[in-house]
Length: 399
Image 1 (cartoon, rainbow, N blue to C red):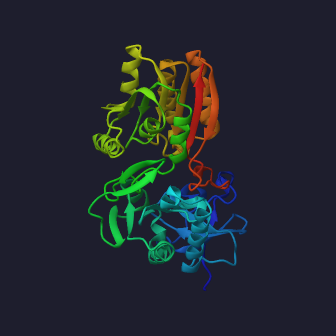
Image 2: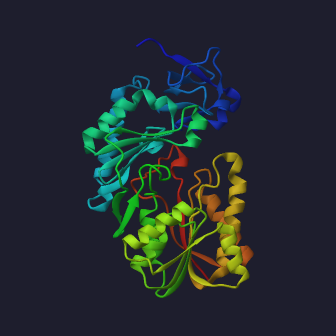
Image 3: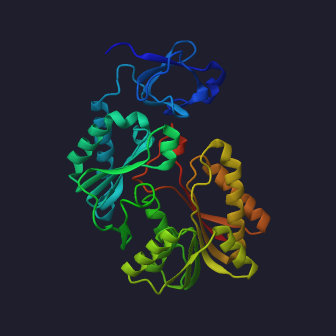
C-alpha cells in the first residue's frame, strides 16, 4: 500500500486530544493544503511528526477524522471491519440466552472500535444505523458479515436527519436485504411483548439500553404505589412497573402523539390497558401543573430525551435536569422512589450526581442513592471514549 497522507495534530490544541479517543475534531488538526476525500484513509501525527493512529477522513464533518487503529502495521480494510464485527458478535453471544439474544445491540460504535456503526437485532431483523459517512465503502462487508452470523430475514439501513446534516450525506431508510415487513416486529422484553416499527421508529426502532433499568424501577416501586412516568415514549418503564408491581395508579406522560399511540398498543398487547392513564403533554408543564395542584406520588420516573448534543449545551442541559428533578422531588411522598435518567453522553456521571445534590439541597430533601446504573451490558462503554458511558440511571429514595 502506498504511503498515506498525514494529518497533523494542532500543537495549540494538543491538550484537547486524549489518548486513544477515536474522534479528532476539526479544531484539533491543521487542515491539509489539499482536502482528503470522504472516507480517505489517513495517518494522524503530532506536531513532532510522531505517529498517533490511523483513521478515515471526512471534510464535511466536525469530526474530521475517526480513528480505527493505533497499530502502525494495521490498515483499515474490509478484513479489519469484518474482524471487529466478529469480535462484537462474540461478546454478545456470551451474554446469555432467552429474550436477550432475541433482541439486543450487536455493534455499539466506538465501544466496539467501529466508530459510526450501530447495529440492533430485533428478533429476525437487523437494523444498521450509520453515523459516519466514511464507513459507506465498507457497507457491503458489514452486511455480509452480519448475514453470516445471524441469517436474518431483513437487514435495513438508517441514516437519521441529524447524522445526514452533520456528516454531509443524504437522510435515508432502506432495506439492504429482504423487504420491509408488512407489520411491526414483535419482541419480548422483561416478560412483556413489544411491537417494533422498523420503518417509522426512533433511531433503530426501540430503546434497548434501558432494558434492565426498567426492571430496577419496578423492583424499587413500593406496593400500591402511585406512579408518574415522565417522557414515557412507548411505555417502557410504565408497562414494566404495571407488569411486575401492584400499584394504585400509573400516569404516563409524553409529548408525542405517535409515541403514546404505540404505548397504548403495547398496553393492549399485554392486557394492561386498564392499569395506566396516558397523557400527552410537555414534561415540564405536566410536572408543574401537578405540583401546583399539590399532587403526591410514591414513584416518579424521569427519562427525558438527550438534552446536550455538544459541550456547548452541557450547562443548559444540567439546568434543565435540575428543574425537572426539582419538580419531581417536591412531589414525592417521604420515602418515595425517584428513577432519574440522562442519555446525554456529554453530561458526566459526576455532573449528574452534582445536579442531584443541588436538587436535594434546594428542595430540603435528602436524596438517598440506592443504585447508580448505566446502559444494558450489550451497550458496553470503553475508557478511551467517555461518551460511550452515555446513559445514567439513578434510583434513589427521597426522604
